[in-house]
Image 1 (tube, rainbow, N blue to C red):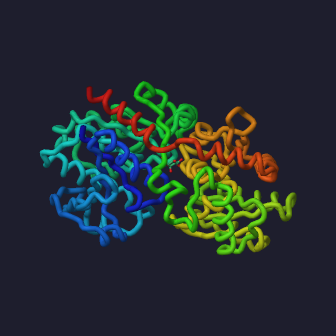
Image 2 (cartoon, protein in one colour; image 1 turned 180 degrees about the vertical axis):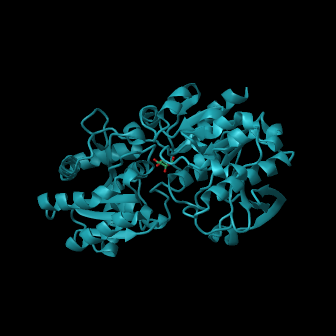
Image 3 (cartoon, rainbow, N blue to C red; image 1 turned 120 degrees about the horizontal axis):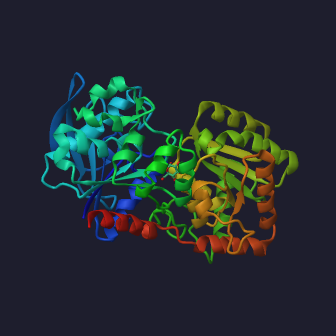
Length: 472
Ligand code: GLC
């Protein structure tokens, strides 16, 4: 079975969020199950393309509006990521350093999808199934059915994976002329509320859609940034499959980015030493619990709550906790975080930016990780944390709800809160601190956390079962 994962992010080539981690791992685990899985993504002007050998495997061109766009498909020669990766290059559109935030994003992703289909329609080696990830590639299930040039691809099955239903890729109808020409009779499939909505199009036209946790799927039926009725209407096609983690990168026993490796039996000493080294590096005390936040500074992730939470925590617990923040994103949130740390320079430290290797050190060094998300389709950070014996403190929502059990329940190993209310969150953190101060409880909770298995092995099988169902 030949499966192509179509995505605009893939770790380590281009990562903004968890989408990249999933696309960079899932194909590898599917290949272990005998599936011929590969990734097709845009070419980015980033280190990966100069540090690896690329083979030119196809060249073509197509028109987009008034432009003729020439494209090249490059394949990374040695499958260094554990699966084949194809990069589509278009001068001036798919040759940029960043993934998002260009003013012509619509043109960029339409060009990517068009070039992909133009290439596929011209090769003999066609996939049996295309797994499209998020709205950027949401037009593909429509185009293979209704674009005149691609109708020979209509037999290819499509799975659409929703990593985040908040972003839908809206385009005004005056951009429709940029699409490959399609049968206008079916044009309504592109529409939702008077605009072209690629996420809605994908939901309507795909053979199956998946969400990155079961809990999130249920939530989308209720609230999906305007698409809840559509999610519900198409629910017969839906399945929630929780993400896994790539244990080749995320395992404290072999993680080369850590000063000291450890396992569940050496976790006490292992975390102590990693914490000591880390706290010295970032100027924090290491004899009190260390709580961290890692992630994008987005409203969705609740990052805007951090400054008030910090203020609240220190009004109650002057010297009982140290806090480390790693992330970047919204400038206003970043500014507020920058201000607050000046008030507590000895207890709070921050690194503004995206730094994968620092993230590994933070998971190993921290005692707890906070995730006050408003929306969390899956969340990978709580899974990384658990794997490193770091106790997650999370809101009871989406994928967090599916993967973290509060210690007040049988077999619990984390701390869960319901409301996004500062007092409530800080009470939950205090509950965690008190567990931390009892060495036996700490040992037991860490032991449980590290024994959980969130590796991709299990979830990759669910995707493969779904593909099999579609192709039988
Ligand atoms: C998005 C979601 C996150 C999920 C990730 C990978 O970034 O916000 O919750 O874990 O995609 O599916």
